Length: 133
Image (cartoon, rainbow, N blue to C red; front, top):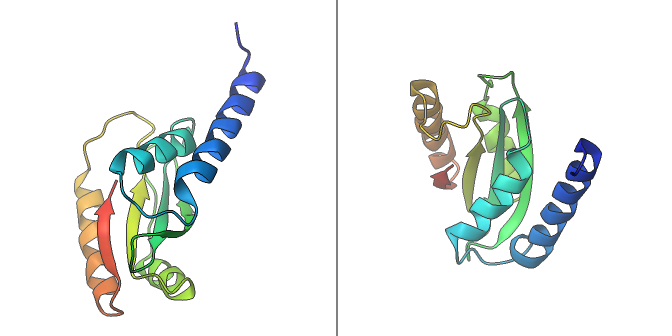
């Protein structure tokens, strides 16, 4: 039986392997690669987080950054900070990343509302939202 410390170490190693193999500087050819990375990154968390995968014009990943940390069932997202981050990285597009510690994959009404708000704010600076997961 693997104890919690060993599990955490294994998850960190898996995340590093996925980042090196599929994520940093790579062109997004597969949603599965991104999903695998996000599952390893976000699944063990017991609180909600919101982050962004920042992309260039060729869909290559510039960076991943967790922006906001919440509680077990909500996270506050501030469009100004998302716009600021995208301009800092000179991103052409973003993948908005959000987890649900409950395991439910269905977006809440708040999730849908903030996605629309972010799309509107980012359009003003010519950054598109590739998708929200």
